[in-house]
Amino acid sequence: MMSANVVFSSAYYHVVEYPELDAIELVDNIRSTGTLIRGDMAAVFRASLQDLSTHQPTEEDVDEMIGGYEALMNLPVHYH
Image (cartoon, one colour):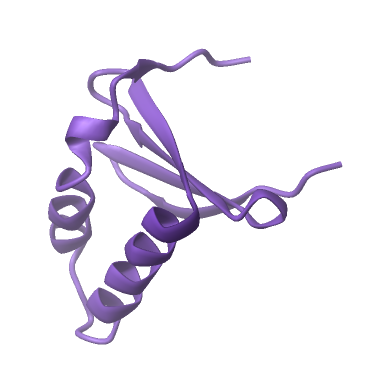
């Protein structure tokens, strides 16, 4: 069974990490769209999140950083 770790959740975004796939799922809760990023892009996202966390960010700060990836979140989300 593959593990999934919720990294962040707000009214606007949901971030889930899949360690076995070296992947991160980004979901726009308002538009019900998302994307799966892997490899270098996932590494850049993790580094941005890690850098942000060193400054004790607010939920709005994290939402703003994730919003920078909004153009990629264009696939419809299907809940199961």
